[in-house]
Amino acid sequence: VRATGALGYVLLSSFLLRENILSL
Image (tube, rainbow, N blue to C red):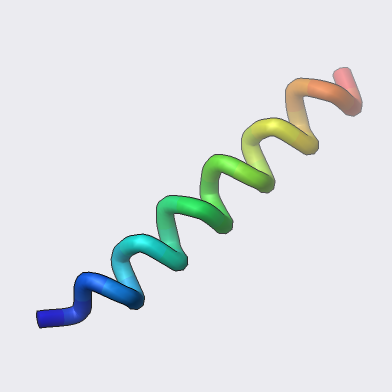
């Protein structure tokens, strides 16, 4: 089970998404 990897991926995706929204 890669729960840690999945959680890290979600956090990274949400962070990048937030950065993109703020940059608009």
